[in-house]
Length: 381
Image (cartoon, rainbow, N blue to C red):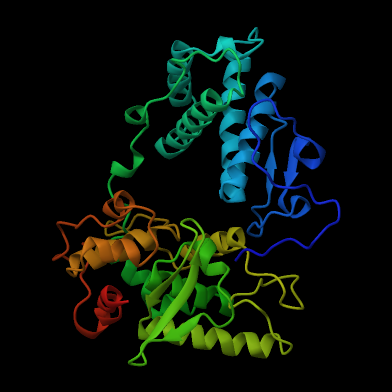
């Protein structure tokens, strides 16, 4: 969840910066802290660094662009991602064009060279797409507001040049592997109650790990018929959403609430408080710690594929698996998009490709009868 920073007398005013307007105070710093700037940010996502951009003529405009984006509603984590992308571009310029003294050095051929450089560095399609998208949006803003004088009109990245990483094969988890992960015997081997209940909730709902870790203590609502639904903040799309809960997910949430009441008699604002160093229950479970626990658990249970080879899955793959199961069950794609909070139909089509093996043991099964009723109810929310 996000929460506003406490009021400060010297808090910088957040206003859009255009033209040659100067950045002052904390905005001029190369290290932004969301709390000190008075900007809401999720725990662990409240910093952005610009000191890795070695060219002063590039660093200043990047900070102006970042401040402008905050003023127009971008999340602070997006600002951090933009700063990282431009830091990557700065590193490329320092290596390939160390003599570049201003924006005039950036031409269309230079950008084409940058695309090749990203590929040669071994970055994934997703990282390359994000890097080029940020460059594209930044240069468009610079052309519009004059933040990079001398930038060639043809210095741009076109949409069709972005790596379409969402067209890769959907990363669902085969049912042979899911059967191991969902078994009561395997779940019982997760040593921490909070981690165990969190795993069940993510499996059953397809929530992003960060959204799940930041659920409030009581996130459940009942519809007119009494069916429980999970209310959560989908940070990526900046919207509050509802997911009808399965009996298994509902039971895990109830069990977790009972555990929190017992472990923290004074109460906690979080359904999944942090496990260690959190005596007052004031901090939510760290997503990075959850990722480590999830990986360790898979080694403990000896997770393997049909050939007996060890495999490892990520929490995000549970989203893809849920999407594919929904499609296999005949749930319309627009409902699948709404359910886990996908940003676009393109994202949903990537997650929810029907598996041609779904009628075989290793495929992705549909969700028949009562087991899938809570998901089909999503179309009526």
